[in-house]
Length: 447
Length: 78
Image (cartoon, rainbow over all chains, first blue to last red; front, side, top):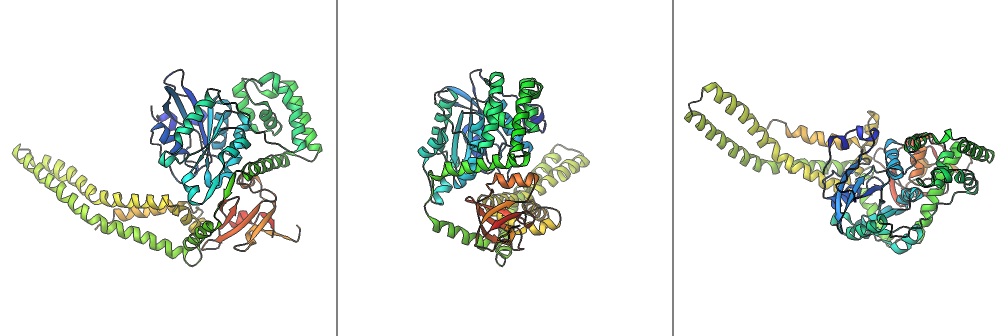
């Protein structure tokens, strides 16, 4: 199993997703989460695949799939796009929502960042609104430990009504427990009583007008409370997905259309027009996330944060930000140039020794001079030069750059340079690309 | 506009302000709400970038950089 052209190509979004089970008994697990929480690392560690992980949001443009075995059963893990929300403000969110809602996964794992759990809870709450079969994976526990953040998993799990597991996917810590939890949830052995997000009384009343109508119709296939709210909210992308899923436009059913219309009119009468309704929904989710974390997440060392800020100050302040950045980049280039000389020399000596042997061979075979010229002096020699000159600096430059990326320095570079880049109608993130281009440009400079 | 409110962009470094309302619309409004910026949220201005824009803010435990065009659409009270 691996990534195929269809599963990674752009078409995967529109063409619907084909789950590749190797065994009919395989469970399907959706892997959701905010961008940048180590979701791909969890995916790779569990499935043994090498999906590229990166520091920019939206790495997972389309669904990637992998499989792992646990207690003799296969689990097909579907990596859905990283999103902050399922309210479908973007194509990624739509894909994520549609898979969780209509893809019929046996369980959904929501990966969270332990260092800013409250923000991640927004997505968790939206997920448990759709399905009760959720396991919350609080990842980056190692980072949280460094920042002296303590999390009471039992309390958190009690608040949410779904199992919560702490992991550090990079070092595989907690992944066994995660697989255990996923097994229990997928087998239906975990009695889930997910917390209900409480909306304000007007919204609750409106939901109450629509939900009973839906219950008899689609209650067995979809969470009606959630669907009711989405229909009232007139989310066109969801109505489309729902139509595809049910095989009929829900609004074609007169009773449904009427109930939704009544609820909307009621809300409008209470001053909650479309825009206000969405604001209220989001506010309730944010406040819900706040209350879920209030008695479960503790920041034990404020001083650490202060130290963190001081380093940030050095890296991004008005007077030191740019000089420190230039020094760091200069250091990297210097290391690359100096460090590459020796292996370059070695490589070219070796490769040209082989060229001489090739020449000997051609002479021994009495090959015509033009053939020797074309193949040995042409093709081989050029290749040897390119490899000898380019390979060592690349082998030094890119790992060094990766170090900077892992240390979290690149977002700071983006922060420093955003203004300048914006003036050229670009954004600070592109600084990363520019650095890589600069690195490559320097690699092919004649020496 | 209430006279006690200023835009988030004008909050000085190191000061914490409370969100009064968002004036941004459309997808930027949604994005801001997704990161937890709603009425009543505490926002601390951490640091300006070398060019003075964007500015880094501490919002619900996460450090987030906002450009002036966006932060000047957020009304806060100090």
